[in-house]
Image 1 (cartoon, helix red, strand yellow):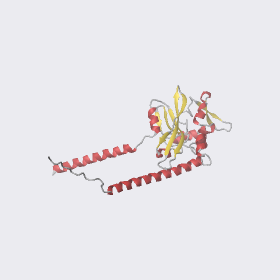
Image 2 (spheres, rainbow, N blue to C red):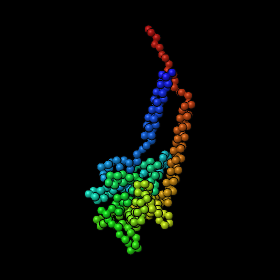
Image 3 (cartoon, rainbow, N blue to C red):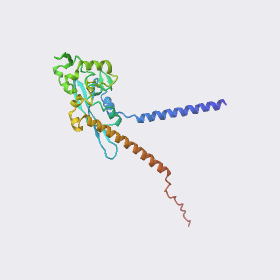
Image 4 (cartoon, rainbow, N blue to C red):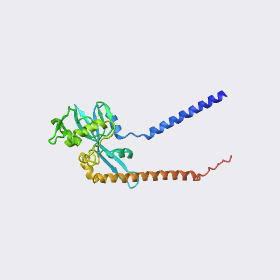
Length: 267
């Protein structure tokens, strides 16, 4: 009796182990790295960098699933001087595209003194704005405090698409105090509109070509909603079609012809 219980326990443990291994393998297959993850990996030797979502697009397909695409602006440093590079187009998953729909012109990943962050933030806010190596806080004629880059770094304002009003001390303090490294920060104007991101004036200035091509922020928002609905519908139909085909195949009788056994007559 003891031997039977012991064998039963062994079998249960073995089955549990197999189930665990299969589950882990399935989860690994479902996870797909984004282009941003790959870029971060490629720049492992860089101590500081910033990845900004520079452009987005949807390649619409009449038949088949739409293709969602991203383009990035990468900021690296050479002798502490920031320099930029615009990447080519990357195909991204629909999920990653929707995750970053609001992040045009935003920094969606960064590395500051070796520490990586993938929480969306206003460009430059993690490392350059507020850093005395690159500029200083000054007060305007209206009494508002804002960040000003030193002369040799003045190009950084256009690099990040940041006018002086977007480097307002109140935005900076709000971001640093409540959002940095924890959740995306878009700011908020008195009329409720965001200060940063796709549906803001900052996003429009960060990449004017995007808004000309898409017909404006509202047009882009509608287009995304329509294409995602279409994509979901196509995915559902494809899944149903696959199931129907599979079911039909399982019921379909075999059409193979049995081979005849041919015996040779001995002479």
